[in-house]
Structure formats: C-alpha cells, structure tokens
Length: 274
Image (cartoon, rainbow, N blue to C red; front, side):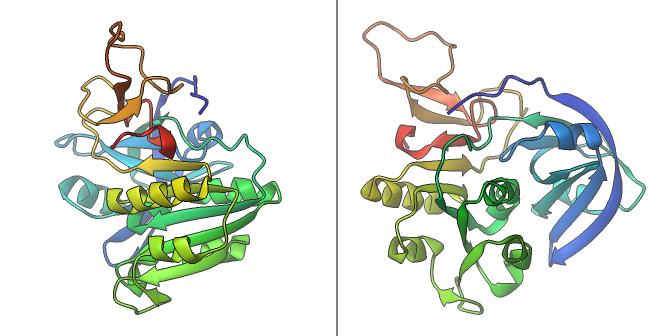
C-alpha cells in the first residue's frame, strides 16, 4: 500500500449544518475547503473539543467535496458529546487529514465494501471514488438494529448495491454481515471498516478466497500523530507500511509493530498478524 506524504494542517472550520441521523449518531458538516481538497478516502482528523478541557478525538472524514468536509460519529463519551452539542456557526478546530487511507490504484471492477456500525463513516469516499471509475460496488452493511443503519440510502442513491444485516433482524437478514459476505459472489477486492471481530472475519474470508482486502482499523488514539505508540498492531516487517523506527535487529522477528494512527488506519489484511 502506498503511503501518503502530505503534511496535515490545523483547520479552523465552521459548522454549517448539524443533523442527528439516529439516536446518538451525529453528522457535522463543516466549511473546510482546504481539508476537503486534501482528504483521501479512509483518512481521518483529530477534532479538538472547543472547551479545551478534553483531548482531541479521532473521527473519519465522511464527505469531502468543494468547501464541505463532514464528520459522522457516534456519541460514546464526553469528548464526542461535546462535539455533538455544536450548532450551526460554531467553530471547530481539526488537525488533518491524517493517516494512510485506502489504496484505490488497482483496477478491480467488482468490489465489496464491508461496514459495521460506525465503520460506515470511513467508506463513503471510497465507494464514491470506485463508482466514479465505473466499478460495481456492493455495500455489505451491518448494525445492531435498523435505526443504526445510518445513511444507507445515501449509498444506494450513489449506485451501490446494498446487502444489509442487523443483529436483531429489524432490517435485512438477521445475523452478522460477515456471514452474508461469505455467501456472496466472489469480489475482485474488499475494503472494510468496523469492529475488530468483524474485520478478522473479513480477513479470514478474503484469505480463503484469495481476494486482496484492505482493512481500516478502529482504535482510540492518544495523539493521532504517532508520538505515543499507544495504538500499535503487529505487521509483517516486509510491509511497505512497516515503520522504520525502531530499526529491525539482524536475525530478529519478521513481525514489527505499526501505529494504527500513522502507518494506518488502513492495512492489507494479509500483512496483519493479529
């Protein structure tokens, strides 16, 4: 996977719209032309709560077009609650874009995108880019209940074919989205974001099919710039995303620890050593 070399910036943005898509699910649309122009599918920002009393929190960039960049997130604690309380005209400082997103340089024509819960926030730009290139895109979208299948229609309107599951059976099939993926027609490539158990299932299925898969890992970041090494994941040392520090030892392990916030959040499934 290619690593991105652009430098993140500090963006003083203004909220132009706030919508609650479901209970405790918020979409903030920001006036942020520089951020929108720089963001690539799968990247994220560190959003700074305006009070300054809490640490910044990592949020995927959901939309990025023209002057608009938006953040779609679930309220999970005090930091996201403070961000959710913002209204039109409020200022929000964000740092980004950060991380290595999805590598869309391939020529896959039949693509499966797998999203679980809040993972949907990381895959809209990916889906839009692939559709614009003429790829057939199937969105495998799973959530606990129908209410939490936020913005599914947005993907359908863009041209995605939807495969939906819910844990309680209130919409689509009852069960996990990984089971639906296993029964589906073999794709040329898989792109996924969601909870770790789902991503492990996607990786296993991709390996059995011999299909390249890219996984966007969900994690709580301490700094977002790779300084604290608090969000590491084991990765094969031969990966192009393997960090150069600390330097490998001669005759040492063929596995290194990569930072999800910096070398990731997107990794090739076959290079991870969970």
